[in-house]
Length: 432
Image (cartoon, rainbow, N blue to C red; front, side, top):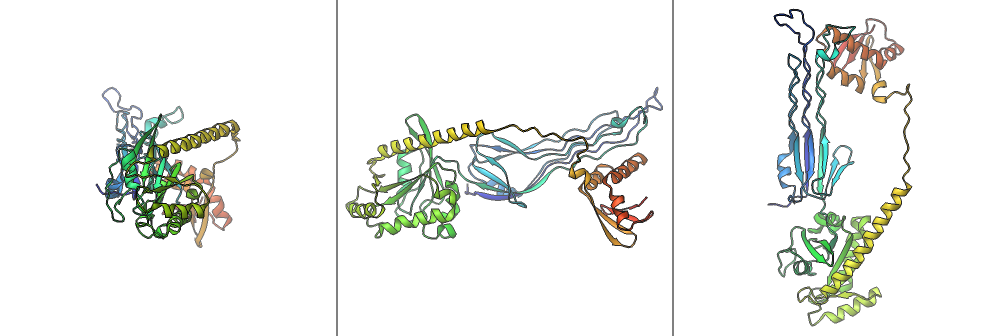
């Protein structure tokens, strides 16, 4: 299957079913009361983390995911059926963004993690719901709520503990094949690895996930070569292993080879700059490695961990070093979490009785021309869809919503007089 780590989707949850107006008309109840049922709920769209999925290829081909609407209510007070929810499996490590705002909607990191990304609309009430001692024969009923709709961008960033970075032919694929269950393609030419490779490594009492990122080259952070496409996959790693070939046949300028990777990591992301990095010199099984090792140690003024991934020389010692560093990092993270929990203070928000939600109180009125005014209001748009203007009771109810929005009052401040026109959602109403 082709490796795909980004895709855009249009998601649309189902609308709620409509409530209906119906009357009980049986043999012994010729003038029975209201009998209209409620609409069913529209289908949700739920994202689920699935460890068996490792690419977004299938979703890229779908483009659009639409849940079904709830059924309309029926007579005899029967509610319409709820629509089935849709469940979308995605790889662990997928971050979902709102395309319009670029905000993160959710981050899926665990298998079985669920997130309702688009909620289906609630069903509308039938006229039975509105029966009261004041109105025994209501003609009130409602349409179902609209389901949520979002255009989203999915970005897969692998969840790994340790990331391997380095120039092509540094020996990353050889190392991960020797220490884990991964079986990457290995050859003596650049860009052998075309996709990130994950492998599980057992070290003492821990199972750590290592990730081999395809070879970086100079300019990768700005889009050159293959590395740019995969740098994001190491952002979640706790530790980075910078593997560098000490063989003179691979690097005739060892300092430049080292600096190339450092520069690309720094230019790509501040997060990568701050990650713990272990520099490892590879291929000490070659005859010409010592000179490069001396040059690099002199330049960096530090001792460099040396191995031969091919012959597994010093590899066990390297894994022990990684384990110790990883354990310290995890313990520090746990301590920070505990400290953060101790500092949390619960604050209860007290809502005053006269405090109004902006959604229900706000409306804007614009003068189109003499005698004509247009209203922009999320509140009235919601109720215009919710209340079908097909019965006397519903018309009265919607007029009450217009009154509560203070749209007429604002129009009159702009010069409106009775019998002038208010345009709400494309429909004309008279100013009273």
